[in-house]
Image 1 (tube, one colour):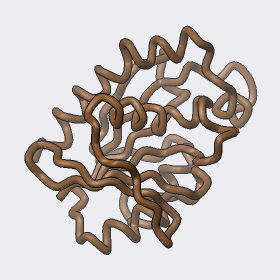
Image 2 (image 1 turned 60 degrees about the vertical axis):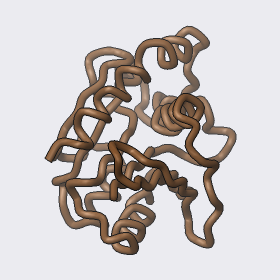
Image 3 (image 1 turned 120 degrees about the horizontal axis):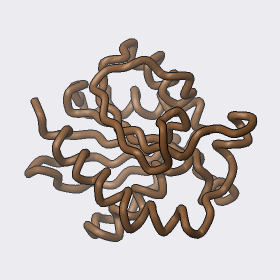
Image 4 (image 1 turned 180 degrees about the vertical axis):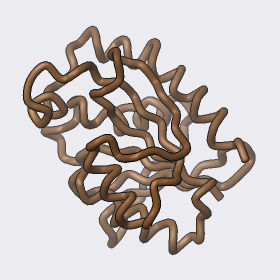
Length: 177
């Protein structure tokens, strides 16, 4: 079984912000691959089940602020007994050189990303797979940058160019042993 986690803030006011590139990618995949609707839960997440590379896959959308994402991840991984090698998280990175750049890492430090810090703390390790999507270099305060909205042109670029490439990276690296 695989667990794929997209990081973002779940409230409508954050919908098209840079910090929510993970949730935007999830919406893109959901439409492209037609996986089932997300189910409400008594916990702080929405989940959907899907078949990925022939394996049952749980898609997790935490319903906490980004900074508390680890709570949902750790609880779900323990419940389903998902090994670290079958887990990947997808999120924004403002330190990548260019907008839309994609980088895969199978272990790495948080780089100051609070969602990753939370996951690392709750899992007790930095050794998990990550797909980072560049949201453009910060030109002002980091909090203002990640909470700023994408332009129409940036959103189009994400959908047409970046997300299809990110899906290829996901396919290549989630199934790697």
